[in-house]
Image 1 (cartoon, helix red, strand yellow):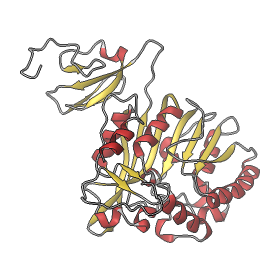
Image 2: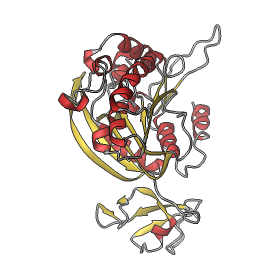
Image 3: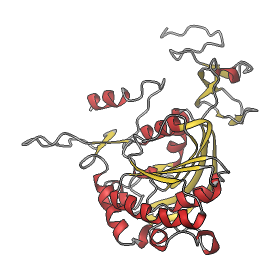
Image 4: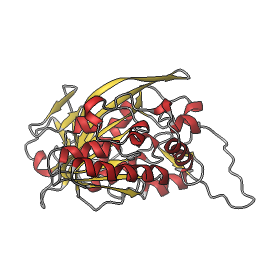
Length: 355
């Protein structure tokens, strides 16, 4: 287990702090002939999954692409005149838990990436907003969903009068898009399906332009997910098994380097095996750094629970947050500013017994 944790830590070389909670990463043990994996205890940080970590989810959504699954249809899907230009097969298979395009409010000429684009509905809605000078890229790992979305794309292009949507096969943990190419990244109830959410968020940071925004609708909980739900292929496919606790999610966004984190909407979604699940729509931004504006880690000392800087950075008391160096120059002794080794660099402190 320690070897697996060390291997995982090497995947995040640029992070000064590395945290893994139970189940943060789903790991696939090699299936050598005659070799069995025996679980001797239950408090594993890295949980086990089948095939490549995506196998059961891929199978679930392959079936959902062929036949509409009413259990996961989006209760917030647009209706009436808002989606008349989208072909019915895509609308019937519009799975999700929110309306990230509406909350993202993309503007003319922007580039939008939709992670887990499914039948293409969010991409088509975004295409209407960004217009003929914009660009929309949908990413999905399921061949049948990609085929469904591609078939609808041609009709949408004819209806809109321009063709700016493309679909690419890929994984959230390795997004097939160039660095710093997106103004907006959206996702509708898909990041919960990722077996490695931290890598997914770091990939989103990579593809966003400086100052770009992430808007996600996804499922969260307030308490740990019941083990029977977390390890069920059905409940994982229905976006419940992989749901994060809301406070853990927000901390992970901060750890990865996002700023200006904001909650847009939250409403009850489902109740399963004693767990209450909620649909949460949230926003976060990639920092804008100049050539000489290196990221610096700081922590607000108090006395207030939190504060927001003039540039919109929210700092919670005691939480380590990454800021541009220029933002730290005006900070007083209400803050710890850390150097590369994690030592407080802005305040002279008496040495302690361990130093």
